[in-house]
Image: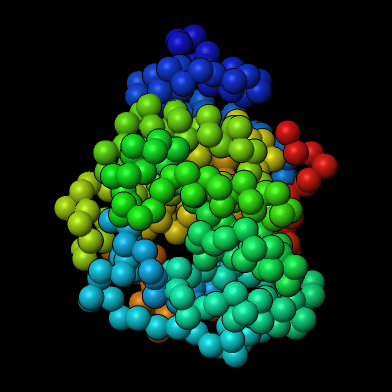
Length: 352
């Protein structure tokens, strides 16, 4: 047994590795190490969730954003972006269609759009919960004051996704404009947890300037935060951003880190992301086999799906939503798993 095999087995036993050991594992992992991690992660996910893969209906309701993150296709400086906003009625139509398809979680995602005030977000959440009380509502709309998060929670929002992107303040500063700070991002995550949201964080794999040490910091940050969800996918460049010519993250690195995260967080809700499916044919299915247990089919209107371009060549922007959903269900079954449209809540009593 080599050193990396020993490190992977230690993680599978629930041991905490120091930053230097995690960085060495990430930097020197071999194909055999990846296979070991994937096998153990798959066993872990099967033990905790069986063969269920939770389906979340993703509604991208605005691509306006006040922020200017250097990697993002909907950054405010991108004059080529075709902007749009969905009305509350259009969002409810998406939910109605998704509910008819059996989905019981809706993820409302958008840029940090000042048009969507607290009052408008609260109205949307209340309307969705009133129409579909059997469904969970997840918000993914960025950094807000504590008071705003509290209003969303009181309105009935169940979950909130806010990727930390990187746990290194120095690295964070290389990916974001000066007015944004790692400290505020962390403050938001702690506020969400304190308010009782099922809270999701996560990072980009292969982001510009990222080092194995940065990724080790991410793993330790999440181990301390103890999120209920972790959204992690490869960095993919967008043609209208400063990082247009940067290389994409690799599928191999992303799949390996999915497995490591599953070993470190046995019960976490872990998506196989659209970005992974964009980078690698069958990538979401490979992600499930590496330990993930969530997928988020896009149920936004066709025009919105085409315009919500965080990175180049995004998967799922072509074809009808019904066809894409049916194809994803079939592909999940083809690898021996069963699509589960239910809420699939995190088991709070088991939180580690």
